[in-house]
Image (cartoon, rainbow, N blue to C red; front, side):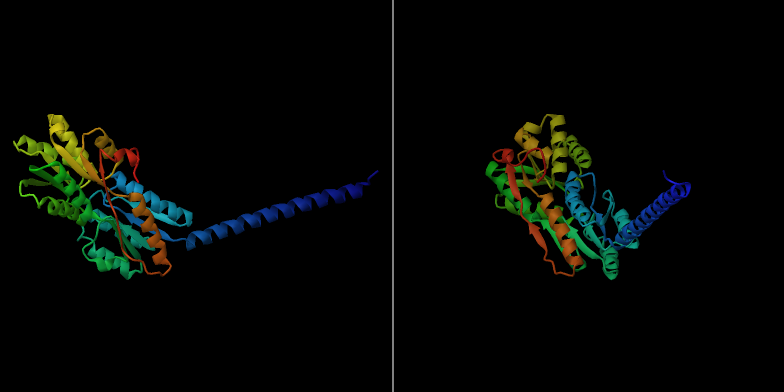
Length: 324
């Protein structure tokens, strides 16, 4: 039978083991907190600013960059200037102050970011321009865009296959180089047929909610036209909606650029004639790769991603329900 002294000794030994265990747990927790803090302090901070986030194209593009940043256990800051160039400049300045290591940017206005991007460069921040060029290309460490001129050109060529003559309205976004290049490509393609005339160029900033009333207003003024070339798919959706409201959709041909699921579905239904497909997943992946290569001190070349014509003949083969 155990003595009272032996029992007391075992009790004290048990209590001592408990105290030691608690001490070890506390030390581990403190170590993990300090280690986690160290990891956070050492992680990279990537800033992203696209011209607007109400266009699903940029959400898809940003998803690819976010996946890469998260996989690297770094952090991302996303800001939405909502097509306001002054707000974009303000937001980029704020990100610089927050200590970003790299900036992925799609300019609201191709000429407006010179000063703020120079500040980024002066602070050692790597700048990757995506989707549309900036005017001063020396401020970008890498530029990754679609072949925007070709996008307009292949749509223009397809238009000529369908029309021996015509009166075309063009919906534009003059502030962006990508919009200007697409429009120029389309114009150059159709210029070979002197029986095709451009009757109007209407700026809609590439937005469905602007394209719709702009085209309606043009129709209300008694304009006569039989086709609409749109610099992107949101403006094509806006144009199609305006034409449908007036009962003109099935006798007016609409063309876009993007390859959005909405427009693919409208092409399949015969409501839009064609679009030049972009690949936002490729743009996003390549932008992410460029960011991390630049941060490692590697040289990175600019990239111009090819585009593809989608019509009713091939749209069903190109994942109608999603972006690519």
